[in-house]
Image (cartoon, rainbow, N blue to C red; front, side, top):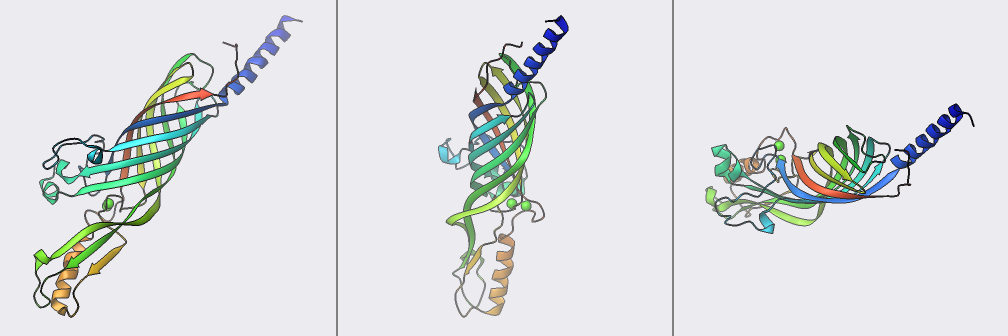
Length: 277
Ligand SMILES: [Ca+2]
Ligand SMILES: [Ca+2]
């Protein structure tokens, strides 16, 4: 066979191998911290760590922001991938961590749990999905996510006089209800991968823009009032003024974000052996 034909067939074989190698699968998991960028909390863009404030003397599971992810990644070619990502997160964002003294004094806690399913498109800046024993690359991603979070309602209760307003007898509390509230979010982020054989280790920072202002319980569409009957109209008016203020904390014109900072590993499989390199 002439050398030109040999070279052509070898190149074609390598191209087929290359395309086949790009069709590989990965399954993985990751864990890390999280925070919200919302009306309640530190106000910081990135604060995925527990913080000991006054009244919180030690780190416990219940006051630690945690995120766990389980996912499947399909590599479309050496640089592009799609990922189906399932996550569960427990958020703990405190006004006490805010540098604003007024917000510190408010001393509220955004205490939320979010379950999320996301479809993400990844772009690796350096070829990493092809046949290599070692590789590393920064990457970026974006996609669409649906989430569920326990349903809450705001309950305003007044037990004071019906003829004169008593401010200390009016309470507003967040009350967890049965079921979940569902919503959509837009995930964007970046990370860094290091591949060794079939394992890929990575660190990732992901921001989620939600289409809701209620994730931090700064407001709610579910409000119930428990007031005594026969209340004077002047007292009722004052109660309504007070509850309107309490039912909307922060800026009603912007929605809540949430942030994941995670570290994890994936295992690759489904790849054909190729000896082109
Ligand atoms: Ca909010
Ligand atoms: Ca807001």
